[in-house]
Length: 139
Image (cartoon, rainbow, N blue to C red):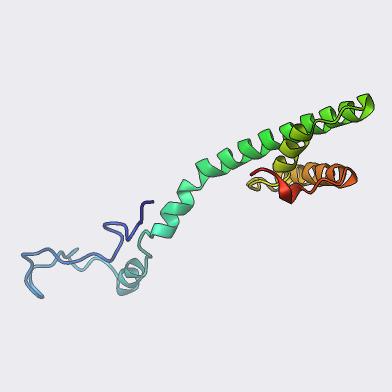
């Protein structure tokens, strides 16, 4: 695991090594009003939190894709469960696999998260009707 301790260059500007106190600093020639200089000093530096928030764009899409695949797998599993119940042949291994699908990482998209949660609830109801506990899955 990589630990981020700070972002180089994200702090306030430091004077150059060779700068003398008072006389060697950069000066705009007095053209900047005192209010504008104070506003420029008040700008927040780039933070590690902001950079991490920008990096969250890709994982959100990945989480949505995983949740979508899990939802589709649960729907296929429910259809197979229905066919197995109608045919009178329940496969315990398949039921354990379905129980493992009931829990998973939530999607980033709220609508997709609600849809997958609804499918997972329906799966839990069907497994409870068969007296199979999703928490006892092989995972």
